[in-house]
Amino acid sequence: MLDTPVEKIMSKNVIYVEVPGDREEIFKVINETKKTGFPVVKKGTRTLVGIITLTDILKNPEEEQIALLMTRNPITILPDAPVLEAIKKIVSNNVRRLPVVDAENNVIGLLSVYDIVTKIIARMNISEPIRDHVRRNVVCIWYKTPISAAYRIMKFANTKFAPIVNNDGDVVGVLSDFDFLKILEIEREEKKSNVMGPSEDKDWTWNSSAILYILKKTVKLPSDKVVSSIMVQDVVFVLDVTSISECASKIRKYNIDQFPVKNPDGELCGVIHDIDLLKAILSKEIT
Image (tube, rainbow, N blue to C red; front, side, top):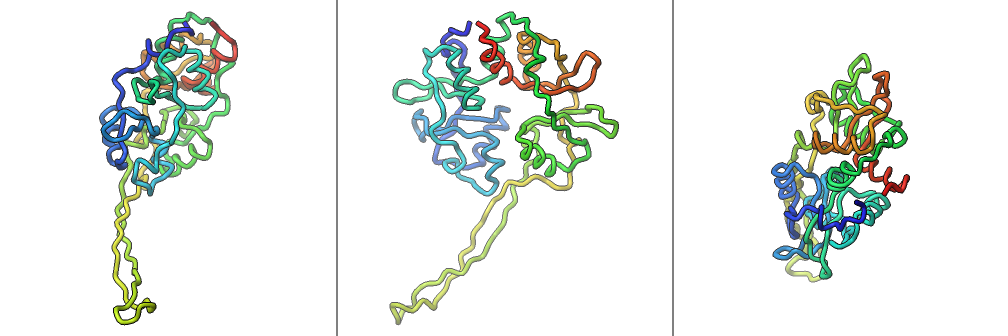
């Protein structure tokens, strides 16, 4: 199945954004589609110029223009390339989606980790358990942690997913980067700046001035709310003895990217992400 052409499983109804454009357009598309990453094309065309994700926005809270937020020259793939080639590109470049382009670099599709996991790996009948592919260094966050602090913890730990625990250490929810979108605030700040200019009677004397008002809009997370107010409370777990293909099927069933993992004794022992299943394919050379 790994020799299946990318065009057979890619998403053909591509949702993209255009440049020039601003951050508010991205928020609108994210809210409408519940997706967090999009190809960026030149206005009025389908010519690929970049890719933008929710992470790009959160990393640059003061920037508004899509052209300055997006990643330029994204990794792409051709429609007739085999799925195995796509897996290698995704894993080696640590990306979650590949724009599918034609010979003129026009976007004709989008291939995501989710597409490969649910349409290929879930159907491969791989019986090997996920145990060896589970991430064991788990960042857990206390459910009463302020949201702004939780975001920083996840950022410093370089993770987009964290189990949430109560006072007893029990998992009572999960938090992903998408959950932060629920409570993002746009703070409007007006700054006053004096602009100097030359006087009318002396060419080289800069002694006149004007006042320039600059309106800046910054993305912020509220400091008065805690993680329990935005976390997902219906937690779906998998066991570390779950097979790779069964785990992929659960990702399809629940339409989520990752799971907390328990050992047979019911104890939290790690987390597994959809991209970890792609890494399993490469590490074991399962065909």
